[in-house]
Amino acid sequence: MKVNGKPMRSIWVEADGAVGVIDQTVLPHEFRTVRLTSRDEAAQAISSMLVRGAPLIGAVAAYGMVLALRADASDEALETAYRTLLATRPTAINLKWALDEMMAAVRNRPRGERLAVAEKRAAEICDEDVAINRAIGEHGLRLIEAIAARKKPGERVNVLTHCNAGWLATVDWGTATAPIYLAHDKGIALHVYADETRPRNQGASLTAWELGRHGVPHTVIPDNTGGHLMQHGLVDMVIVGTDRVTARGDVCNKIGTYLKALAAKDNDVPFYVALPSPTIDFTVGDGVAEIPIEQRAADEVAVMSGRTSDGRIEAVRIVPDGSPVANYAFDVTPARLVTGLITERGILPATREGLAAAFPERAGRDPEKWEPVFRRDHAPSEKKRATDDSISTNPAQAERR
Ligand code: MRU
Image 1 (spheres, helix red, strand yellow):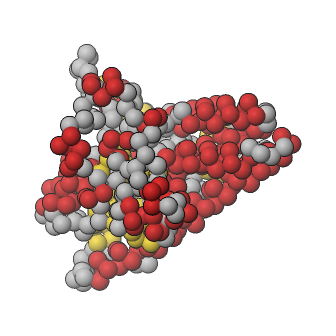
Image 2 (tube, rainbow, N blue to C red; image 1 turned 90 degrees about the horizontal axis):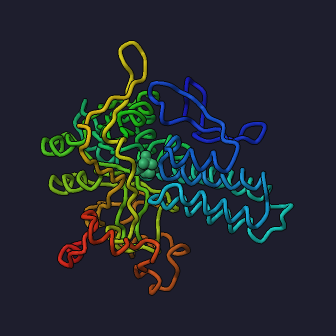
């Protein structure tokens, strides 16, 4: 997409091999780019959310491997880089996917070839992401066009989105935003409700910034507004992104997505999820039980920062000292609430069969392999199960899912 009239991706390689990214922690107040020059800088950029969004996290991790190999191409350095980068954030499966791709590319190569091979695969991962998102855009555009065709003259298509699944969250185009940008560029009258997305406000800060730069009409709304708008017929469709989709179509995305899906279901508003195939985790079935949900620092909730009227960025505390805070970064929307999955291979039902038929090479051809595998590293510990009410151990609840 363009920044100040210049075409730009969210990640690039500079002449000296450093990896350039946009500092997403200072947007929308400042546009600042940062150079990543080592494995640890790449890891820190991901964990601090200087870069964020599932596909971009994967791309930065891929380049983190490149930076690691540039310093040391030994087996040991490779394994350490893999483990260090994988530990940065737990929920977006694109991170593991990209690291596995990098490992598969370089592991069996002689040391002397590893860096060049890694550079090539990381660049491909980025280019593939751009192509995938463009294809998602084309498929999603058809949905927007169908709604636009039913509108009266002068009416616009209202899309609600949550968090930022825009070009900043990917290498380019975005996932949820790709259909929006294409529809807008085609001249379809369209308006986006951007959920503010507490606590880190990716909707208010990033989605609004992106849409504004591209000239897409939009309105930022507090997170609790979507249900009200849907009850009053003010939302034609919801499109969100995702950090992990399970083999049976459960969707993990930014905290609050589930409530939007419930409101959409209650009001017959179509609820679409846009995703590139690396976001599908065919090893997981029940998203609520099996996907590790990141819990972040309390201060992300207790402290808000923003620009003062005289232009300074200031942080203010909004929670009483001593009040405990919970900060779950993601939730899971069960497949039954999802109208369709917008992928690079078309719009799929959120079902095991739909996903496996579209991506047989990932699902495995043996239907046995489509069954959920309850992986040890995904299972909440017994202690956590007993104390953490985010994870249901109630069989009746599990049954409903
Ligand atoms: O915590 P974040 O900002 O990394 O979360 C981002 C999201 O939840 C996005 O919706 C998701 O990664 C999809 S990005 C195309």
